[in-house]
Image (cartoon, rainbow, N blue to C red; front, side):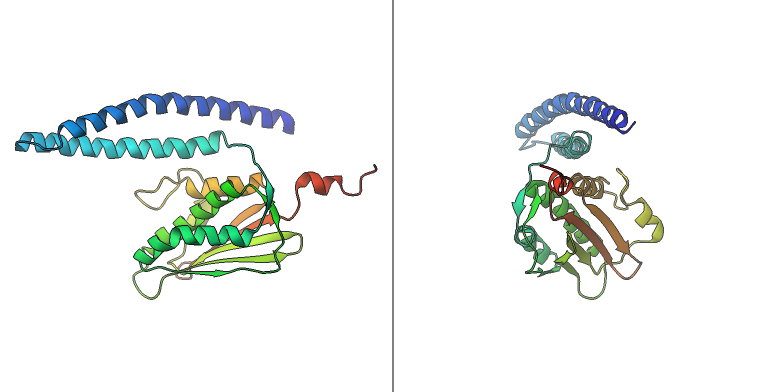
Amino acid sequence: MVGKRETQQNDLGTLLGGFAHEIRNPLSTIGLNLKLLAEEWKEPANPKEERAARRIKLIQGEVTRLQHLLDEFLRIARPPSLKKDPRDLNGVLKEIADFVEPELRRRNIRLKIYPDSSLPLVPVDASRLRQALLNLVLNAQAALENKEEGEREILLSSRLQGDRAVLYVMDNGPGMTKETLEQCWKPWFSTRPDGSGLGLSIARRIVQDHGGTLEAQSEPGKGTQFVMTLPLELREERAGKGASP
């Protein structure tokens, strides 16, 4: 039964992924032609041409937004296979911090890292794990933009917990209500007008593909904490231990 369900999900993912690709191709053509039009109307000569130039820019923005949504959708519908290698998760956290810190500083958000030096190398697909962590940090950044008073902070930390590595992404923002917390993992759900509602869904999917879990803890006025757990060993290795030669 499980195998049949997985086959149906894979078939549906292939179908939806192909559908998204068919949309993206003409959308790219529209974007290219809009770019050419924008170049031709770069220097409008009268109010009528100025209005046309503004409309072209507006449509360009919508095309870009749709292209971004399609890219995010494809990551859910047809996720790439994992390429796991033993990695230093503290190093991955540092890479994320180095990438986002300039923008966070510009927005007056402080970033702190608390790595656990006892954490061993963990088999992960570093590229996809960075994507999941980045989605969580960007979610924290968006939440902090709604905080009107006090310092705004994002904390990244790691911990060794039994046979699992645990990564934390915390913010001291306004937090989420119980209702929002229950909905936040659903694709397309967002409390922001400009949000795609896919960031958290993709992050959880990536962690689950690694055999891990991703949960959120939050209360209004007390910030939000995302807790990511990852197995220290590959599933194949763990299943094979103790087997007869």
